[in-house]
Length: 323
Image (cartoon, rainbow, N blue to C red; front, side):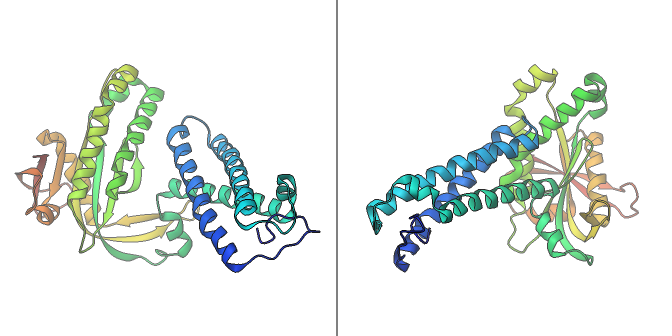
């Protein structure tokens, strides 16, 4: 925009203040429009159309947005700053600088949208961690893990068959987006099980883990009519929560990912397995319970000390329900 869209034969000098006003106005405006469009496209079209069509639809939307931006820019420059000589809209948009700015903006936004899809495929934030090499050398972190598993999965799979069962799991994990506002990281999907994680910090509110699970339950409850109409049943998930040290490292050569290792993971998995034995939907370890024991909003019950499979020491297991 440095030449205000005039032709090369009618140059104009941009005042720094005017250029700054253009940047301040159109920069955030373009970012908001591109961002909202990307979010809306993902929310309403993701899983309904293939990824290549999703990106193509986004590209068309970007062209429309940039066209609107250029129309707004033309009238703002014309009536606010003024051209040195009369310039019609066709001259404005056919200027080489304007054409370059138009396609540059669309190209950059398309690349950013593509990187976002890759980032979501790897797990939110993991793309940048892999690029930075954060976990090339293993290191220790304190984390909360939640293993969420579908209850009666074998029976459901036999009832629905392979294809409909996979569609069923797709729908369930799509509704898992309800946990996003609680800061949960989706570590991995394993069949009909999903592993969520939170990095422990001194200021962390550990209740968000419980709220995330209950938000997922509420979302499934909200859509139970859809599940009944489509599959003839409503999904029920059980979960186990634990907190502790794990080692984290970048693993793999053919397919790279960030992996967590340690007893914390194993104990969480074993606690989740105890849900069927106690007929409860949410069990937590003593270690995690100690982080929230003085807070409210839940009803705890000590179920006993368990010798979990693969462990020799006894571990206290608590059941938590909403108050």
